[in-house]
Amino acid sequence: MEFNAAVQTILKNTPMHEANPEHDIVVVTDAATETNLGAGVVVTRNGHILVHTFRITKYNSINDMEAQALYQTLRHFEEKLSHHRINYFGDNTSVLFTLKSGVSKSFDLNLWTGRILSRLHIMGSTLASLYYVPSNFIPADAPSRNMPFTEEHLSVLTSLSNCLQQSVGVE
Image 1 (cartoon, rainbow, N blue to C red):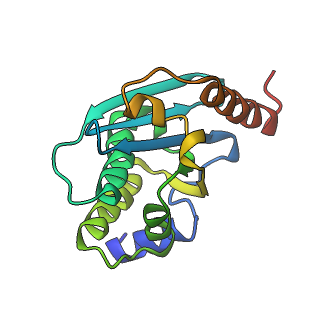
Image 2: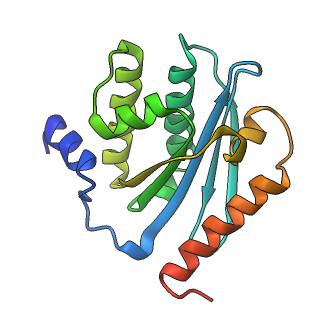
Image 3: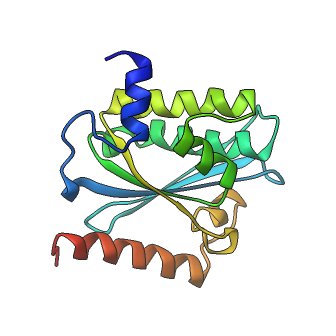
């Protein structure tokens, strides 16, 4: 499949490989300029919560950091995320808009978006949906600041896990 066709397929939320709705998974990412850390949290259908924290060394803006956080999370959890419909939650509206539209005024953000979409294509996954979550409620905020999860973060993760399980009747 040609790259432009692949990008359009992902942006239209059409899986390149028939992804079963039962394969929905949640990915939440965040980045923090004060720590130069990025974090990704994955919530699986069976309720497992996976966390990956990493250092971000090259960036021009918080938008670049946030996009890198998603890319690094996709790479780190590639085996777990392959052939899944990813429900992405983020607190950076520029990244969310660029993922939805496929273009940004920022050259660097366009580069990271291209890398993200290419990685999704390689993995056989699709962005099923994009959600904005205010920073104080985003579960990946805590590990990106080298802090423990707050009660609010744990509550959000529990709710996301319950929603995934209920959508297919997993007990």
